[in-house]
Image 1: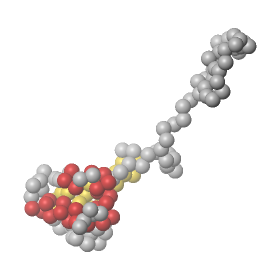
Image 2 (image 1 turned 90 degrees about the vertical axis):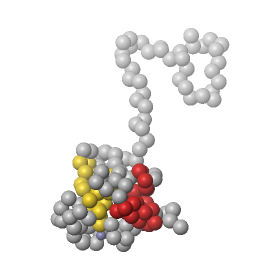
Image 3 (image 1 turned 30 degrees about the horizontal axis):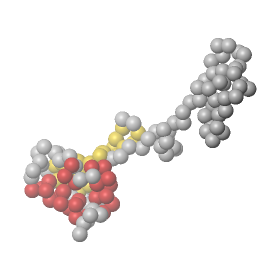
Length: 147
Ligand SMILES: [Zn+2]
């Protein structure tokens, strides 16, 4: 077939369709493997996942705020941060809901996960409560969209 008058314009780098010329029959020519999906290579070898957040009431008085180290009293509204460690493994971090602990960085991180602060999960016991509303409002006020 080669040498015929069929002309392939050289502006494409696709292999010409007449390439099956090798003599070694049934030599399985490995198809060029497509490049892996482009994602930043993690040094740990897996994709970093985002943390998840949740507004809840402290079931005990033993937790401490990750930021100000204050003890979060039993029943106090708190922010749970499930920080990704490795696939299938998260560490639960706590934040008290003092205005100084709901900072712009936290707010931005939450918004980057949920897009809207109203989508942050709220514990059933707090759903619709003034406390939940207060925390949502505090996150909103700390965020980049704050007036
Ligand atoms: Zn705190």
